[in-house]
Length: 187
Image (cartoon, rainbow, N blue to C red; front, side, top):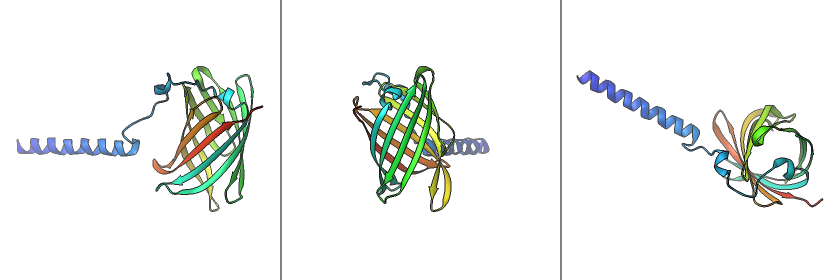
């Protein structure tokens, strides 16, 4: 009987341990894009990123310290369900970067995208005023290239302003966050 009680205690401790590890790795809560379905204004990426958009952003490391500031000049063009988003980054230290996204709008508010510094295909979904975008980026750091995962969330505030917050991680460990404010320019 004692060995049976000990076995139950061991199994209980193991289950609690597994649940704790899963919660630590996933954050115990998941943000689903569908929860924004009723939010307005309705976000249509092919409409917002059609034409000129200017963004201002920061990168914060794991401790929350701002380690990089930047501006992004974007030019988006759409033909049917195919889009190109040309992004030109200028960092506070004077460095520049360019990323050209090739986007496809599919069914039910879903989007896919590729870029030269993105591994494989990025996948995203809109719902209401929100867009969730997941991809792996080849990130250059001190002469090396690291593949890091982005969990990217955009929220349309009005027809001219969208806010963006992206978590960056490697092996499930959060490395930092990127925060951007997009401003659609008049034609």
